[in-house]
Image 1: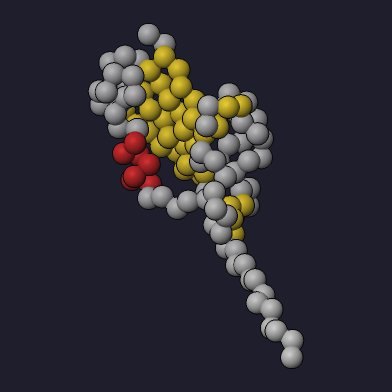
Image 2: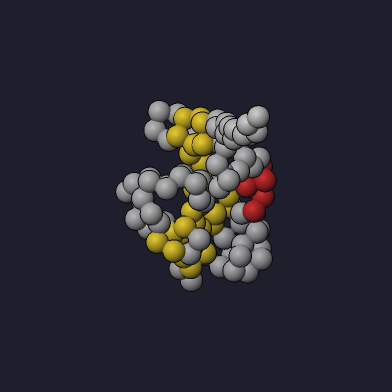
Length: 111
């Protein structure tokens, strides 16, 4: 008798908004509550003071803007970079255009 081979099945759930397609089954995609993301930006990384935090949502894309009124540092973060966002970085390295599985950030201090 032949042994039955276990077949490996993978399931994938993808969501999209017409511009972005996100594979929720990917090991690099995470679902995080929006308030938890915003909480990360409430304190300045430079001086540890309270910051002004604004958000912009379009479809699946979330952009968070952080401004410190004390030390004037600014930070912009997005979960889905645009192809023309050359100024964004992913994990401190230059962004690979079209990559939608990593968060991006930009830091600058204008003091």
